[in-house]
Image (tube, rainbow, N blue to C red; front, side):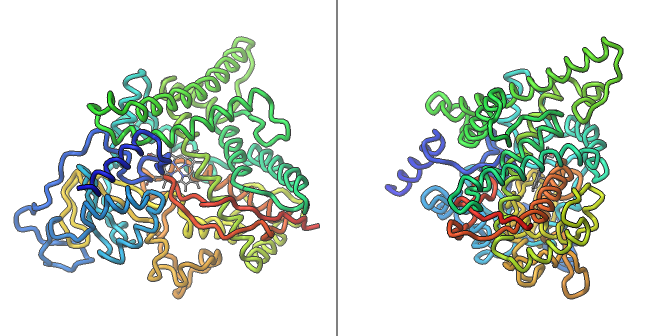
Length: 539
Ligand code: HEM
């Protein structure tokens, strides 16, 4: 009883924001933990439809199907201890592995009223994703929707469902889903990369050895923010300047605050409404951070709208990028534009910056691999030519570098789905409405799919012969199918152009300040300590 009390106490402390929490910017990424402001209808564990025989190839024909009741999994009490007593929230990726070892490739968990089936096998993940309907549901977004209803805001792509989601997705997918759609942003992104290179030079000059840059993620956060802003809002914020303009400083401070308070308030979704008067802080912070995020987007969207109106009034031709198109085409309402700009900014900064940080760390630790990639860059571009998006397919190792980084450190270590129809997976009957956790970290590090799974081998993505065949469902860092990451091509463009030029200009090396950096889950898979490396001039 004392233990239960202690766990409840810890739980409430977390909920009230006194303990750092670890939720995700993308609701599905953090699996189930912030998706239950209104619990899903209880899943009946002991049910099988009549004459239920599995047709799934994985279990063979005419195999009797088992019920969820028969599925193994950790007990509720051991889950509570793991997550709330042993701070499992910062080790979700490791717990995935541990549970897979203990219970197999498909197992169930219960978190209070929430019931989750976890799938840690690439073939079963493929089965689930291939069976998706036209508008898959990732997680229960009730708390996001509640905020939007309360403020009269629209839902964006992350939070929308059904018809609403289909409408927004069909507008955005024609603008940014294919590499050639985002190729038009190459010059804008390259102007941000030029600032990134300058900033590296400025930062290392401040260190006694003249080469070390401390905490590269801080640098990449600003790069990613500037990169997404130039594409989404068609403007430069000046985040990478030595003297950041006051106006931009305020934006950065506001955004940082929003990001951090957003992270500490995600538990709002886990608190039942009736408990809010007793524990008001998470919901208040949740609303406060959304207010800030929407305000930021609205300022920039309105600013662009007024520029367009002035151009039109002066009889000038209106030219521009993504935002201009959305404003001019009127395919979305103003509220939908605000909501999507807000949610895309939210989804596009940390994801890209953590991946760049991990790539940099892996390059520093593996100089011989870095040398191979450098030679490829030299062969394609020489020492001075700035790459454009058409150059990227000619540099398969640059692409392999990003893929391999995301395999070893999938920034979203897991994803979610709520099944929309009855399924048989791994021999178990899973009724519609069941919450699934797709364990991407675990499948990414599976020896069966990736020989030498813990080794950093970007070239495994280049060779596609029988021995090194890469199975895509083993590592799907951007998700799969119709509900996959809409910003994938934007993120890849930003990462490919930045990494190519960093490798072209600098040798990235470990420094005496470099420490062993492990991953921790903070919603996303983040470096648990600062990454400090040297950037040594190539020439
Ligand atoms: C390394 C960078 C990134 C990674 C690894 C990543 C990964 C993901 C993943 C795994 C999902 C869920 C997909 C699914 O459920 O199947 C997702 C969704 C999403 N991402 Fe990304 N993302 C990245 C960058 C970005 C960027 C730069 C943007 C925006 C500019 C963005 C916007 C979104 C949006 C709006 C969704 C929701 C899509 C929907 O529900 O239809 N992401 N992302």
